[in-house]
Length: 206
Length: 206
DNA sequence: AAAACAATTGAACCAAAGTACAGTTCGAAC
DNA sequence: GTTCGAACTGTACTTTGGTTCAATTGTTTT
Image (cartoon, rainbow over all chains, first blue to last red; front, side, top):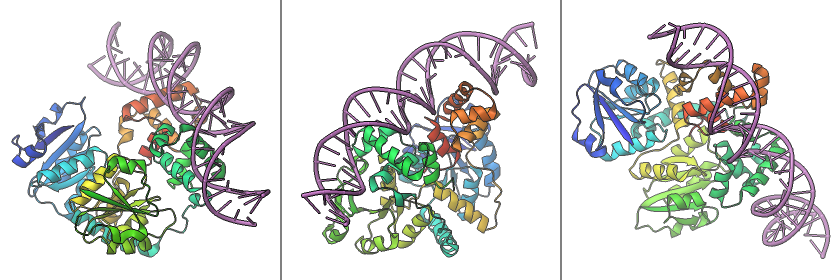
């Protein structure tokens, strides 16, 4: 996995090197030099007092789908929100420990988002109150009520994007059995194929 | 690092074993058997239709400060919120891939909280709206930026559940051309098939 | 005991999806 | 005026998805 770190200067912090020994540094005016054919993780340092959006604007444009993490000298709640809103996959302290940086790298390189524990806790706190009250659950699709447990299990895996072969391997059954379960699921839910099933389970087709 | 998995039965899923070969299984009525002197990570499976709070109540009591992750057969936004509110450090799909499970384990064992990408995205979105900040951000995922207009059009129809034949008829082109566009889309977005594409476009990559 | 259902699999088969290789047309850009 | 990307199509092929008919085993229900 390749790491590209963007800052005002090209000297990395020791903790960065410890977490990512093979990282390459770039100045903000050298974004064009980032190799376009490889894929990796972008790290962009935001220094004290700088506006996140203006720092990120040009960097995002060069990300080409690669995950971007903001290393902030002064992270706070609203700054993290702004970074994520701008398209970053995560935001952590410039001086975070190498283990934390490695963890962040792993999460975002797999397509995840990363935020620190305290912020996440606060997000959960403020939102759970709101979600809890108006409870938009009633229209809960009870697709699983009609299915046997095994059928539902297979259905969920299909909805997550797995192929029949992958499902068979993971459940240690033959591909034939997977097909049998799926045929039953399609019949019971009156669906045509796995894509329709995915839309139904993921609640996009009501 | 020790892993303890709690379910109604003591047979683990293959993917759990792959992620945590040395995990120990416990039934929910065997919580007292969990060794108190060691420390590790608790995983508790919540099966379809079960109420999270009642499942977690007794488990939390035996956690003794160890992080607890909920493996849910049917994770959704409110369920994850309930789990975190109850004291869990994370919540992911029962059938999550081994790599994901390892990632979750690493995050929570270091004291972090873990939630899937899609939920986090939604949390960030809803909270920034609530906080009255800048909300009208275009979709974070820039999949369409990489595609030509026609490719994006076909991609959207696929994501809505249409077959190649239906798309061909509606766009008044041949099925062959639809396939050509899709091949280009898969290539550009590094996707495997139409189901993966649907998940990507519908923002469900958790 | 009989009936019903859940889970499993085989063989054979058809349909849909996706790839490989090759080619045309049109308009914009250099 | 040549180059280039976009949209489009054909033939041929492989792989994956899905159905039909048929059968075995174990558990639960009646």
